Image (tube, rainbow, N blue to C red; front, side):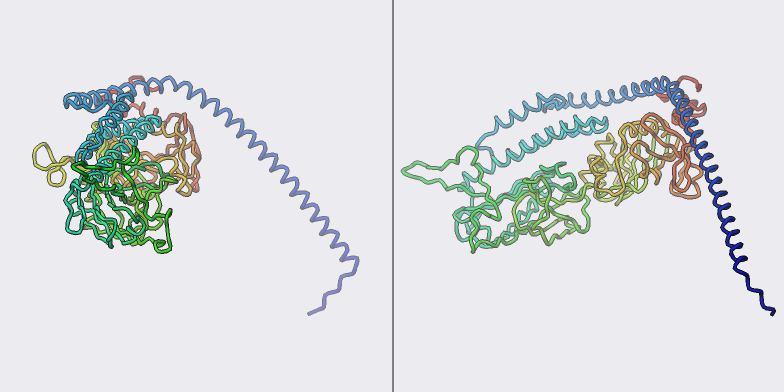
Length: 614
């Protein structure tokens, strides 16, 4: 190939100069293009701001125009609901009146405080444990009335009333423990009247295995000769294994051990993270006072000073620990858990630390759960108040939920919680649990008794139980299913924040008006929205058909509705991002639509709007 002629220095300089000039022209062109783009973007942004401002003005005018209509509709609907609720309340009050009960009216604080004062003043120093338990049962009836009032306050969102109820519930239940303590003190003072066995030991128990309150007592009527002891209260199904260290750390005392089991716990709601299930068992090491003596026909008995009638000994005793008693051997405790409590395969047992008001697992080991006998056993390095505990947010967050109309004025609510899928039937009469049909939940789902009369349809012919929403949810919490979360529970869940109260109220109120004709489902995008916004999906379902809200093929059939504190709007999704297309009171527009309005009038709904659509 012919050789190319080598460029001269001048040619190379010319080419370099041309390239530099070309690059400079290109840069100038790009700079001008960028200036043009920035100017166009600024112009578009200015137009968008102006348009947004104009839309906001139009929206404000539209909301103001609709406000009068919305307030009138909401007010009419609230009056109707208040009227229906007043009739239910009158029925409840009439049933209480005809029952001729002597319980105080828990609506009035003065009657509650009078009741507590009278019970304390009427308490006798010679009261037996049986009498104390009967008074505790009567006190639990008052607690039941307060719980009913608490549930009503939950439904109305009255936090002050809820705290008021829980305060007096705690006070009455503390009074119950005081009654048992006073009766136990009297028992110990006259312990020599009990018939001991050949080893000078006293075994006593009150109640039955399934009672809400039961007491077991064991006493050793000698200050010496105590060995490791296994105590079995078979009637109430409570067992204790006491090590010899019990006596070594209580030298000079005749000791007794009391086991008090209650289906309630004294620490309910105090621990913000943990909650107890299955009741509380209180195991106390007691000092038996000196026995009476007979001198010249007189019986001399040492009477304890006021306030020291019942001496509880600490275990382990850290005040007088010596080298020989430094190691406190663990005690074994077992008791029966009520049949309505859901217990996991690997339960956690905790003791109540009153100094910090928290549940603690320190010193508890070898926990064993027997499903068939429903007995739980564990070893503990101290004697205290024990309970099975779980995290308050064990059933949170909800994976999804949906509501669908399944009959006239009947809606089915399905909630997929963290552990179970729960189904509820909502009707004019109240709320009932439809599933899951677990053995522990049967008494919550169905009325007691069996038979074929009266349209009974549950297992063994049992009729479904229908209660107010908060009452049912409170019963589920007693079973170990906490579906009544507090805002503080969101602190334990990553990526979740409570919604604004006004936004929640707006969504609940609006959605309840269309629930009879629309499927309502949760949206996975809801948790990504700020606290002032909430998102759901709806689809019309006039024929009460069953649709799967998780079916991807049916996504296009749903409309996404976003709620604000003062309005709601249609939204659409693009790359998992919400974009508003028009803001207005969409729920009111849906309800005011002619087909829905005519169906409401046809069915005689009292809250159907009478005015025409504007």
